[in-house]
Length: 459
Ligand SMILES: Nc1nc2c(ncn2[C@@H]2O[C@H](COP(=O)(O)OP(=O)(O)OP(=O)(O)O)[C@@H](O)[C@H]2O)c(=O)[nH]1
Ligand SMILES: [Mg+2]
Image (cartoon, rainbow, N blue to C red; front, top):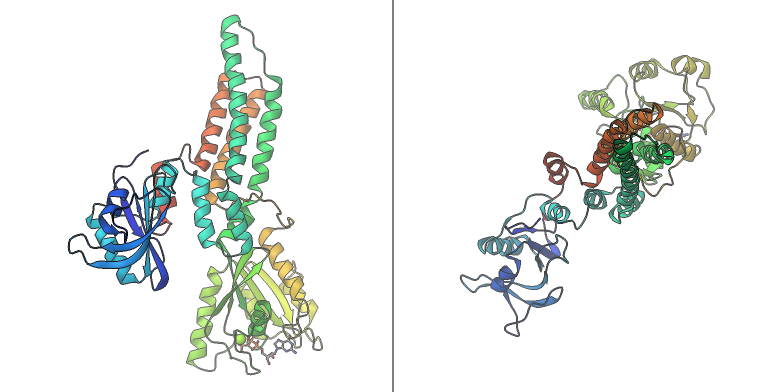
């Protein structure tokens, strides 16, 4: 889809850097390069995909804006599939703004968020899953998240979806031939292999769907709040999980007041941990404020790590916390396992009949690996760690796959009941459309708007 306008943006992050890059894409790219670029050698041919050193000037005044490197990548071999100009200048916000202003004066317009990638998609350089993978690469929180985004960018998910689509198209072709055939002579021969093929596609899609829960967590991370009464060892636990002395730990109850947030990587899931103020009858207004905020934080957390002190009996404060966290997704832990166990397990069991609290020691590290495993299992369900290379990370993909399964079930039922082939063919076409939404063959404008608006400007 050729665009007749030219877009431009600063592609490097705001602030001071070693270099800064301005990207220009569209039919005016070469003209803009010729207008703003001065080579020390005089007139140069501006060959495609070559780096040229020289000056960027203001055409109106002749003033030198920067010493820079420029590359012109002629279509179709460019990121966007259009003529693309990259100007590498010094990473000064003022210089980059000045160059961008001249680029715009020369006829380009400021690019919208994600517009370069949107053009890459619309010019068939990449499909939609690859565009989403680019975003995944930029925002990955763990190395596993990065691996998944890389695989998706390389087309792993697209190839899987395309394989499903090819099989469905094959079945559809067989059915359509059979429809024509039955019109000719009234024969009605159901293709034997269609049911088996449909079953295979459904199984494959279900397998992909089974990765989604974990995939979304890998992409977005999960929030967990550490709560408990004062002095039970919440900050010590945060430090132990992080492997560094991030939070202040003292023997004085009421040490922590503000939230302290840090992330840890649990099998590729970024768990955002928040250490909180100990919940008790506050000593003063500062502590009171801290405690009130804990209850607010609790309501937004996906996971609650409830810390109890194993070296003391449960207190009224513990009871209060146990009561208030009943409806939350809690992982109870009994800390200070290195000390004599004075907590009444029976009493605790009446509060937590379904849970088996882990005994840990934030001080010695005892039980910490088991706690991490426990957190991971709590998040992903009982399923084993997904080793799958292709992991679904977008709810958008999940929804489309579920719709596909629905249509396939319908088609399978029609086939089993020897319904007319037209019915089966109808459902197969619907299934194909749903699969097509994932890669972008059949995706509406507003979905594209939603996807690309999450990108940064210049991407
Ligand atoms: N023996 C032992 N002491 C611990 C353990 N964990 C924490 N402590 C001690 O318990 C005291 C309180 O620890 P913190 O980590 O500050 O406890 P907290 O729950 O964050 O306390 P507040 O911020 O006041 O609510 C400190 O003296 C720690 O050294 C443990 O596993 N074993
Ligand atoms: Mg603390």
